Amino acid sequence: MKVSIVGGTGAFGRALAARLRDLEFDVAVGSREHQRGWERGVELGVRGGSNEEIVKGADLIILAVRSNATLDTARELGEAIGETPVLCVASDLLFTERGIMPGRDERSLAEELAETIEAPVASGLQSISAVELAANELPDQDALICGDDPRAKEPALELAGKLVGGRALDAGPLANARALEAMTAVILNVNKQYRAHAGLRLTGVPVK
Ligand SMILES: NC(=O)c1ccc[n+]([C@@H]2O[C@H](COP(=O)([O-])OP(=O)(O)OC[C@H]3O[C@@H](n4cnc5c(N)ncnc54)[C@H](OP(=O)(O)O)[C@@H]3O)[C@@H](O)[C@H]2O)c1
Image 1 (cartoon, helix red, strand yellow):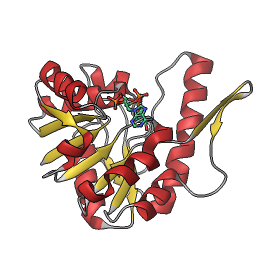
Image 2 (cartoon, helix red, strand yellow):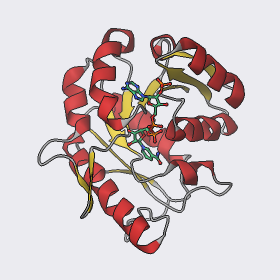
Image 3 (cartoon, protein in one colour):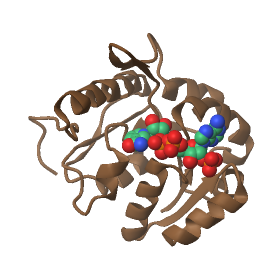
Image 4 (spheres, helix red, strand yellow):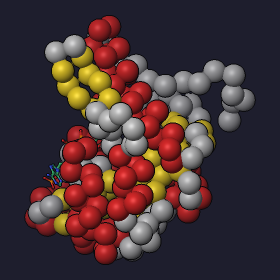
């Protein structure tokens, strides 16, 4: 599977690219700047270039730019992305004095993304940190993926299953990205409170 990581120069994108490279995926990392994407690619031993360049020919695009740039980036790349499936890993969060909170009252970023581009969209991996992806052991987590369109959900589930020690689980329609994105706020608060690296594991689901 050819996987292109838009914003692949960031903490999450780099950790994901390295993990996928080790799993022998054909990976590319992108940046707003061709040169930066190319250099990160060389460092990581994967392909690299501008976001616009690397989305072409991909089987799955992972949109991993800074969360608040997700929709603008998707708008800018809409034509280049075309109908290539996209996995949205972003969470809209508010960092306040009371703690970290969901940044939205209603619809998720992923649902808005699906309305912004032609491509089918799935959502997931929000609870898997860059630090855990970069560790030697696979994260002791399940990966929950939701989406309305199997063209995005199926490759996202296939990829997610290789990134965690637990299972890749189909978490239903894209509207459930509201829960996945908001859960990131819960996990980050727990991590802060208990100096932990908390993750998601659902009980009562048959082992893979
Ligand atoms: N960090 C984690 O542990 C983690 C875990 C799960 C999910 N996620 C999600 O993964 C995504 C990336 O997280 P991150 O921590 O890697 O973020 P990040 O390092 O802050 O940013 C990732 C990349 O986004 C690009 N970027 C920054 N501002 C931009 C803008 N205004 N327009 C377009 N691109 C911009 C930058 O690439 P260039 O400057 O090279 O263009 C940057 O390297 C987020 O949606 C986050 O919620 C992160």
